[in-house]
Image (cartoon, rainbow, N blue to C red; front, side, top):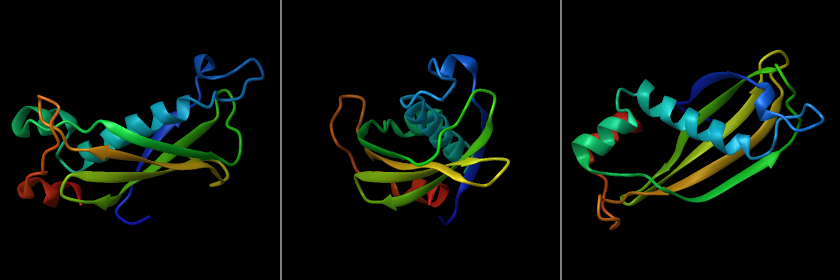
Amino acid sequence: MENFVDIPFRVRYAETDQMGVAYYANYLVWFEVSRAGYCRSRNYPYSRIEEEDGIFLPVVEAHCRYLNSLRYDQEFFVRTCLQEFRRRSCIFAYQVIDKASDQICAEGWTKHLFINREGKVKSFPKKVEKYLI
């Protein structure tokens, strides 16, 4: 992954199942938090994209491949990068990595369309590309 950002986490009790293993749906939540952190680290947070440019980035596809379990209180980070940037869509890629062992626990991606406030697909402004890429 090139041009990545690492966002730290710790598995909370509420994020686990009865066996103390991180519940699978939480990975998508961690992806979202990491994606927002990626944009913030590039000095172009979601709030700025929405307020200044009137662009929203709904998820239109998501994929997660689970490789190794995370458990309650385990520290990890999500490595996030912008894998693909097109005029009207983008794909963020993620790796969920155990902090202690550097072992990849999951990997995935989300695809986003760029839409305006009315929900119409829109081209991303060129001035913003320099921040996110």
